[in-house]
Image 1: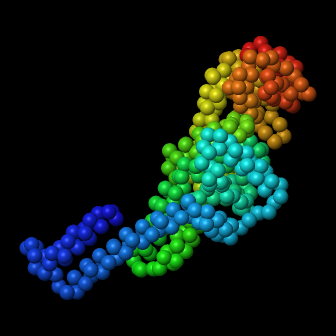
Image 2: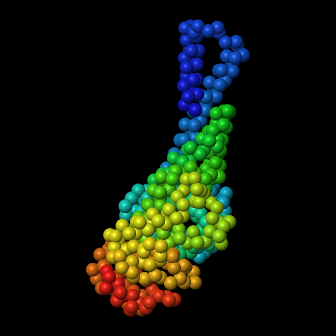
Image 3: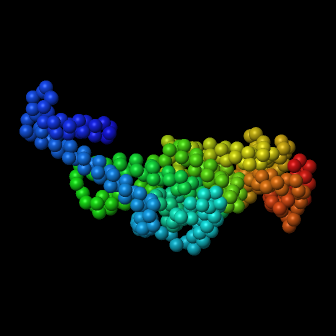
Length: 370
């Protein structure tokens, strides 16, 4: 609609410039002509303001001064949690993921992620412009498993590496402050402040497409695997979220669960399970309608539940370890038990607990079917 209006204004301008010498209609009354001139002035200013707003967004996204300004304003707005345990975990994961990303995309070294822990109890994290990330402490309340948390952070870093936030933010801010920039003249400083305020307020509500969500999920799988995390943790995470929806109903309401532009929990889980099968070279699967982990189509183990993890969630960690073993060629080596843990070559597979068979029994079984 905006482009159509600009074309109309351009036609009017041409007519004015020509004095309407070829116009067959009577001249407009003076008052009406003044209204048209005012409308044209607003349109011209609006176009210039949009250009100025886009330039400011580029500054925030691509300069260190702009990134730091956004980072500090976001911390002021959301607040900062100084919980030492979770901040330490966050630092460790972000460091590992950054190194994992750099292995395939060294551009991260020119624009490292800026991040902080905020006190919101919702299960969420968000990446805005300039690789600036905010992480809710509520994320750790639902899962404090390092590998699972890494998949959430890796997802947001995927958005950042592919510049999804920049594209979505431009659309969002044009809607939010579009009326203001088109209706009145304002100085560059005022527009910059208005844009920054909108950036800070909208970081959890950027227009990200479902296609971009899938891209971020798939990148998270690669980033986490490259960083040494269990590749089964992505499927395990969404299994956990699915199970915890009743218990944490008020926490699972953030933008990350928007049904319009995000895959469902089940879709994400199934996508990650398929990626595990592919990673293993189709050697490792889950038996249909069960929690049985299979190797070469033969039953290996149905992991028992633990005090903090269901059998359905735990099966994906076992599957992830087996997939990594096959991907790294460890399957040509013997499975064995050591200190109560099953290994395949140098890859740990699982530490039996609860009603699981012993490590010795499972190692023997794995040797028979691998």
